[in-house]
Image 1 (tube, rainbow, N blue to C red):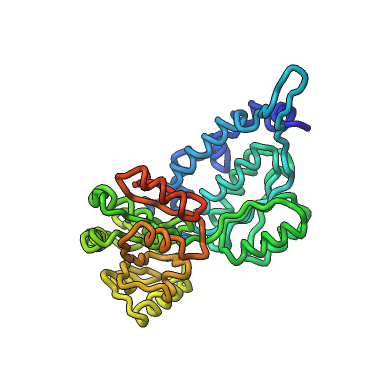
Image 2: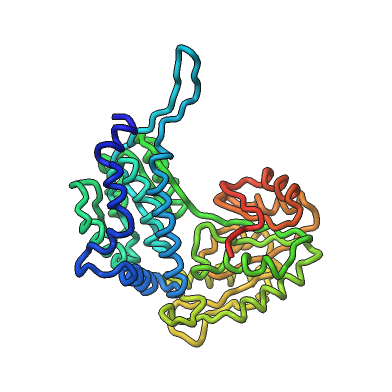
Length: 394
């Protein structure tokens, strides 16, 4: 069945229209849209530790993306003509791939559900969804809402459990793996997909560099740098994890970051005044402490932070800035999933490029410079999946 026929049958315009956010009102009790959104936000905060203000902003942002997917699916699936003359028409016709295993991490439970599930459903791929074992209550709420919508049998289902359940799922008769998680597991899934001769979409670990040139306006980029590193307590795959700054502004930027970080309120996620919540679990705190301790033993200096928060009990760690960082340190070589930012300086453009590329991870990166031509030149030379220039994220 071609894409046009698919849209006219299972995924019709009527289906897409009904599938908009109003489905979240159809679950038990017919709660209002606003109450349902807040319920998801509250669960996210309770299960992951993130600040409630962050959770609410995340829900709103993901709802906007969900709407975009639905509004643009027909355009995205329209046949693409690649060549045409008087006798021939060559075109790409999009068809569903088949049953998709969507496996998501704990840090963006609702957001990853939106990104992994909705595009697949809209193009005609039935989904078996597995949420992280760290946030089963959020997963249960998602399942409750989806099943209340009365989708055709087998279109959406959900499984729960740890990694063993995920492995059982991907070894079943599926046609596509959609996975966000660690590089180690991603490599194993990529190998499995090759053996099964099926497709895999993977978003894995990152140690994103941020290159800051000497011509920037520090007050204007300060908030961007902070949010790129410390949002969700630094527990984001695509976070800025290594800051590479031109030597002429190094001291000034470090001092500005220190003031920004010291002003933040670290505390319980449900407190409306909290600006940074906790790490997801104690094991993450222990890992972070060991990475920072390794750096200190090898000569790094803690410019700010470097310890757990004393005003609250739990896996809370203060936003931390490390200077005098060298390439033999774990904070440089490993993915640091927490509120710790190593910062180094460079003198030449070539040195900045080499420092940025000095990682096994290639997820994302960001360049800050008023010289757009230089930023573009550097962007072509650093080896990452995405390169942002003067990040628009505040």
